[in-house]
Amino acid sequence: MCVVLQGMESCTVSALSCFIAFCLLVCLIGFIFADADFTLLWASLTGQRPERKLKGLVVWITGASSGIGEELAYQLAKCGSRLILSARREDELHRVKRHCLETSELKDEDILVLPLDLLERRSHETKTKTVIGYFGHIDILINNGGRSQRSLFLETSVDVCQALMELNFFGTVSLTKQVLPHMTQRGMGSIVTVSSLFGLTAAPLATGASASKHALQGFFNSLRTELTDYPKILISTVCPGPVQSQIAKNAFTAEINKPPPTVGHLKRMPTDRCVRLMLVGISNGVKEMWISQQPMLLLYYTWQYAPTFAWSVSDRLGRKWVQNFKAGRVGTESFYGAKFPCRYIIYTLVYV
Image 1 (tube, one colour):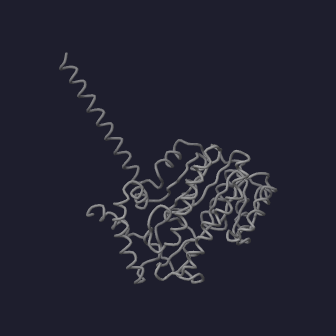
Image 2 (cartoon, rainbow, N blue to C red):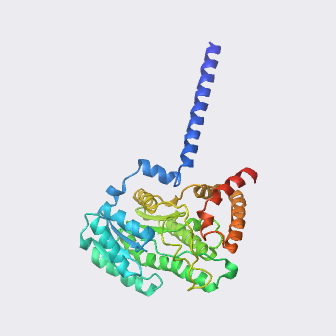
Image 3 (cartoon, rainbow, N blue to C red):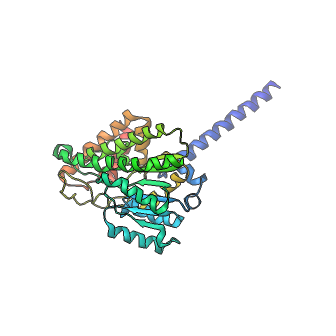
């Protein structure tokens, strides 16, 4: 009898071990092809659909004239959301509005074009009142406006760092300051801020931009803890890696008015995929979203769970990247998009 029981116990342990090994193998294969963190991917598989959750909601998008903001407008329009499109270039906003109307069932009155400069903080109160006066309320604010940077700190004017903080951080905080009381009064709403890979990791040539994004991460993480009495208000940050957009062309360099160097063709996530994942996260209350293709997604997890090892990887990548940048041999975003990081990441994983 004892022999039989021992045999059954041994079979059970073996079966359990095989099941665990199979699950780990599935997770590993899934991670290799993943383009977002596991929480967000799980929500995309099992959570609520944006087409149902976001229909009829009033969504204010900053930086809506191009890139991620433009694609947000198109996909939200198809979801049936009513939109406020804001950026500095009014003509581009009207172009985006026309495309939204052509590709969705929205009517002209469902989309408000509202030019906005994040640097003009004194105008934010008036702009917010205009939105509330037009639609009656704001369900979602998507803080997407901002600029990046491509320059070495030793060569960069402090004015560039100040401009990045004024735009990316203070401009976003200022608009949030005007919208949040309206949401707390209603007891519901969502404030979604597009941060960056720069907000979670170290990156060469982006000291000022990285500082502004780290500041946003700290601000909104702290704000989330202050709003525990408002469980229906979502504070969410989005951290995309390299995405197909115009952000590189508008990046700051060593001087305020100096145009950025030409960036070569790099592998980036399609903007529509990035935005789809963002809307899934918003629909399912995801507080922080990591969105990037491999191998950069691996760096997200490495920085989160093994920061000492992550420094080894970043030091190797950064040294090589800066050398190539100084020599003018690669595009300015190669640290996060070119082919050589894959090779060097694998090299580091093997030999560090």
